[in-house]
Length: 199
Ligand code: TYD
Image (cartoon, rainbow, N blue to C red; front, side, top):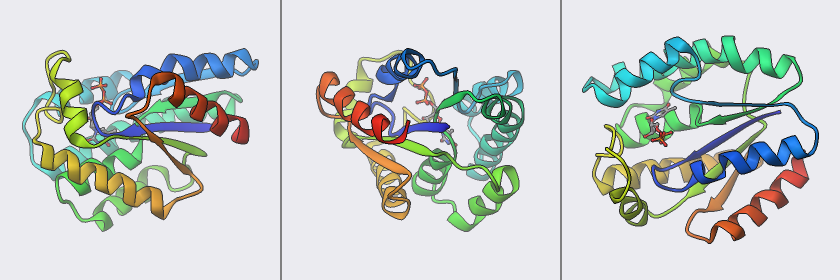
């Protein structure tokens, strides 16, 4: 099973990564935790570049998919083939949300890259942590040094959020929306309910 976590910066997905890993391990499943951009040595170098270096939005999109190509080949597919549950902190929905919603690239461009890089692979389940960007920004204000995306204005994050929610409407069976403003314990109850259905 291939599970991805998505959401605007500050929506709280990171707080649940360890919990998700433990949930599957407690049920005797092998779990491979990973992230994007990154997840491989080349991918992590590309992550450094794309999170900190100013560049054209199309360069940004191409780097995300270059890192993803490596990630799918080196990590995701082998782990799935070995029977593991793969949990990735972000995947292609993030490109549609940030590079199309946030930066304004046409979705048709990214659809070409998606078909190129992972035509026959889609997540089985995507947990979309949703939060109004104003609240997300307040949470991030106390965080460590912000990267290029976290430094963007509220309207950028509002467009990212809207693009994520559009995708949730487009793929209602795959993408489950989680209200990131709720207490951690409430969110975990909702996550457990969703996982019971799919696992
Ligand atoms: P993030 O996953 O939020 O990591 P951290 O919690 O360590 O900050 O950071 C990754 C950033 O990259 C995030 O702001 C979204 C962005 N991103 C894209 O713009 N496009 C993509 O395709 C992916 C995977 C990430």
